[in-house]
Amino acid sequence: MKKPNLIERAVQVLKIVNLFFTGHLAALNSIKKETVYVSRGLEPSSGVRTLKITKEGSLYRVTLSGYLHEDPFVEATWLATYGWHSNGHLIEIGGNRYCIFDSLRKKIFVEQEMSYGYRVEEFDEQ
Image (cartoon, rainbow, N blue to C red):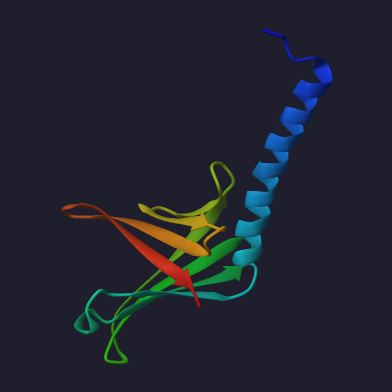
């Protein structure tokens, strides 16, 4: 088996670094402007949930709202900071909520700690 030379190793490292920064750039560009994500329930009676992310200085305000027949029935707001490790995500300050970006499919996953465990919701970019 042939041992890769120094140039081949450097090219492999540059490809990995390029993938890392491309993923972060896509995640940061998706939350640079005020973004609204939508999650529709499986049944019409379950309503629509929206996730709005707005930048406030170096932090982000995340607002999770639920609508049933176009009437708001629940809203939660929290401040979050951007985490650079993995593929980019927002971490609630002083809490247990995470917004994880899937920039290829233009989706965001919100994980919340509930009394019965963790709940993960999937939102599509509108």
